[in-house]
Amino acid sequence: MSATSELEPARLGPADVLRVGLGGLRARPARVVLSALGIAIGIATMVAVIGISSSGKEDLLRRLDRLGTNLLTARPGDTLFGEKAALPESAPEMVRRIGPVTAVGATGAVAATVRRTDKIPDEVTHGISVQAATPDLLGTLGVGTASGRWLNAGTARYPGVVLGAEAARRLGLDRAGGQVWIGGRWFVVLGVLRPAELAPEIDRSALVGWDAARRYLGFDGHPTTIYERSADDSVADVREVLARTVNPEHPEEVQVSRPSDALEAKAAATGAFTGLLLGLGAVALLVGGVGVANTMVISVLERRREIGLRRSLGATRGQVRTQFLAESLLLSAFGGAAGVVLGAAVTTGFALWKGWPPVVPVWALGGALAATLAIGTVAGLYPAMRAARLPPTAALATV
Image 1 (cartoon, rainbow, N blue to C red):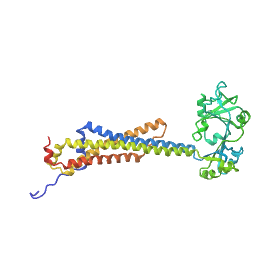
Image 2 (tube, rainbow, N blue to C red):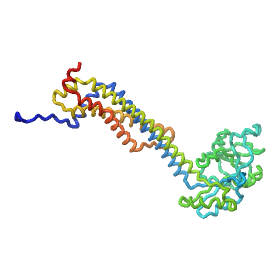
Image 3 (cartoon, rainbow, N blue to C red):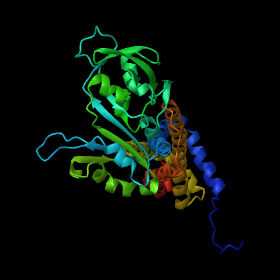
Image 4 (cartoon, rainbow, N blue to C red):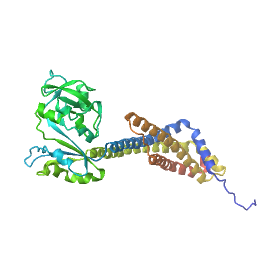
């Protein structure tokens, strides 16, 4: 090299940057751990919130797929005079005539109470209603029996009862075979149902046969709820004509609803709540970023002599800036990686405890790591620039 040629500073390759960055972190392990912990808590919160929300939504979607979204219900509304309307006795058979309809079941409210024994006062109902039920109700709802059997053409004419899941729990009966006191006489418990997710009112009911309700409990024969299933692609069309079919003279007195809408609304509400929790996670992540920035600023102040020595030996301002920015990114990356693992573990544990399928979206993991690197860049930018601006002579003169 000639005497007139200019000296060129040594280049820092990626491996060199990684090595000097890790060297700076290893010199202060306790401070690094505490700073990374703030990032980890924020990232873990965000990953866990997204994961738990996604797991809950996946469970709801699977339940909707299993239960179906083609169930419609028709109930009496109010008359023009504000009185409670009544559905015609022939309404279930009329609904059955709609072409796309595949199954129809009905219940009717009975003015009676159900109790474990005749010694319990009439006022103590435990919130259980007595309802008449058609034999095809269970098939329409897609609900099975946990114990015993459902009503059939024979048992529906005699004093037998099938208890909903919650009604059986409140009465202290978990299996068929006992007796309950209904309307001044004993009824044999024929069966206990599994939970009816699309018809929770069935869970709190004691169901007797349509003919038995007329004969023993003074039932007037008017249905109070009609359940109907049709082909999936015909639900909207059936919904349009259902009120006019149930009550041709006064269709405005019929309320038609789709029970699966409640589960879909629940999924939407879960998403809104997730947004709130994500905001809290972002605040925790911001606090962690402030901790990283504080750590890096203190590191610059403590390492002024090291910075001056490196500058004296030929390190450029850009190389010093790169070193401290790399330390900030590595510090944030360690916290982010720990947060991702912790958030995924929390999601998996919570989902398994609730019986949900564990779901951690890939975009959530990628977004968490991206947020970590962004926080590391922002938090380390000022300390890195401050370190690069230190004059070598002033830095070496620091005691």
